[in-house]
Length: 376
Image 1 (tube, rainbow, N blue to C red):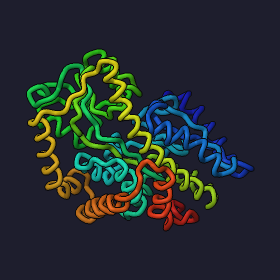
Image 2: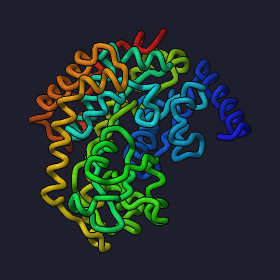
Image 3: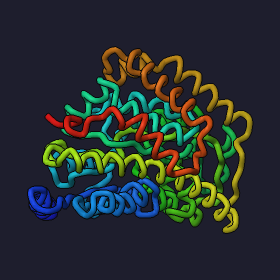
Image 4: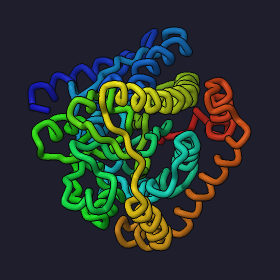
């Protein structure tokens, strides 16, 4: 952001935050994703309407999307500087600032159920003391998670085997998938998801690793005529709603409670609609001439072997790569929380928004005191 725009945004943010003493509290909320992406559509646009409804108009989020205010990698700094009061934070873009969040993201390659992931990650991130200390150090208040569906490969030419992946330049979001791409013979290119289309169009990328919903949501079907449904991990690192701690402290307990309820319901909406978007995206892309393949045996075997390797080295990775103290306890808490949510969701209709919301409120937010959580 240039100096003039940043100055204007800071002044506007200060003005909005100051209104908390009045009849209503207006504040700026930002997601750098496009409006069609579930983390933005249901996590910010629809969430903003829900917050206003639940608060009876007392809370009024001013929602920005894309990079109008902040570039993808600037959301953490922008929240800390109070340019925005709440924003989506993708931790893989700020690994040195969010080592704990990135350490647990290393396991993204090993899980495949996004409904379990979104609630388990929120549960862990709002209860694990080491992760909570990280948010506090950053001046953030964490209020809920996001999770993608498993990433697949959307390519300009067929990539179905180890032979075909060799030498391909593949967009990744960093973290574990980049290591797998290298081991499989490809070349990882760590760029934001907003640059996938132009990279494929110009030939600087051969493939994009992201969810299949982007075939339609971001029109990748136009530049990637070959999709291979090889699971290259899910992403959940960092808060879907990361609040500026100073702003959060100006809110009343009732207002914070409303935001917690909005987070619980919005997580349900994000993941229900994300799954539907992926299914619809694949079906529509096929109708537009995109070839969709299952991975050949050697490519899938490389994924399975890498999963085993990741599990066997995760404690060391968390400790040496990210500097996480007592890494075993942190990682074990995370995997235990994932197992807890696998059990909790075993007999729940994962398309039932009300059921998922009620479960999240009970299991994640019920023991969070809005009078003290995140307040110094």
